Image 1 (cartoon, each protein chain N blue to C red):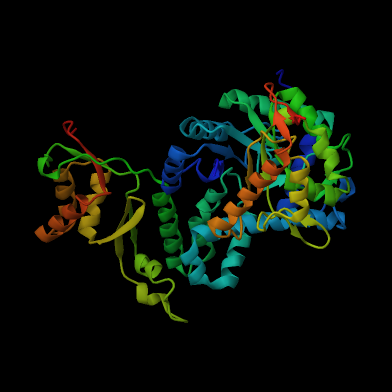
Image 2 (image 1 turned 90 degrees about the vertical axis):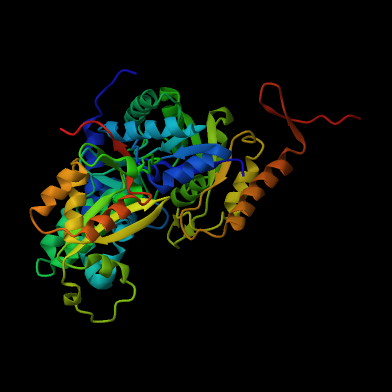
Length: 260
Length: 264
């Protein structure tokens, strides 16, 4: 089919309708024949309300703990401000809230734990949508000097100056008027999944540092030596970490190519 | 169950549980992919990233049909995530046909387009909704996903006879039928997919049961979803209506329907 540019009148109509829907304007009422017993303004309002509901639902679906923490009024105000600041550009409504953690950081600078909570929830979304590869490796045959771990796509590391995982885990049990100060202590978490179930492991700083380096493509020896330069690492920490690495859902395979 | 329909966007960008469930379902059932984000009426054309992801999903799922809506959802800047109505003009039909052509080329499949429910129409429209649909078909060679609930909702909202729409559509052009429930809002009918199919929509289905007897049909339910046996009962009702309607007719070797001759 020969490609022709769309007439300007159609381009403008679509641009104006979408802008009316998004910004709750009524610039097109004289061009509309409303359905049923509606007025033109009321007909447009149906689409305007649909826009609000869909985008708010999309945010709420991925940020349930943030919703608990803020309460209805503040959460829906946050959604309203986010909609205004970030009109949707994605074709996938499920991904609409991807910029919310950064937005929360700006919106609530005095409550930084909210930003970390939002970030944690978005990581959960990414873990949920990640693939699970068939694992094939034998930890006992791994050469610590040369071999590299290939982690499952769902593996994510999370660190925060707040106990966000605790907060998220207990979100439905939080007493009224709880103080976020109760959650003020560093937290390091490994998130992964196995057979579609989500798993969380709270790590020490050393374990987190080693795992972080392994994820960046360092060998076991390189990772332990580099992490050990910052703080003394106990044998127990290393042993616990490698028990965790051997758990199903963390490592997909081992790359036996020589280390660079 | 004869087949299941998926909303393509719920599977397109995930490799997680939804995709695994889909693969499992596909082992036993035929699947059709129904999208809500292609924006076939978009004057700016289609998103290449979307078509690429959709093709990848279609190649893996091997659906018997890929469909989307006769509407626009986005401009080149923003997305409304809603099925926004198009003016029924010749110029608009040309834009839609061009987009369908691009989609069919990218997907390497024939596309089916669904008539949408709407709460407004445009003063500049030059033809009826069904004539617009036929014009799009003529220009693009696509198929129709005929939503009988949407026909009823629009007939009520915009004041025409639903049978005028259904009579104007040729059975050979229809690839699938949707049935769904609407909500009566007092001032208008709202396509919510949250209710059982309305009696009047069942009546329409029955009225065209013979004409569209060979077309796969399904019940859509997106909200307030009841227990599976309740939905299954609605699906069985479609089958019973077809069975009853077809009891006096037969399908010819050429696929057309004719009244069965009784031997004296």
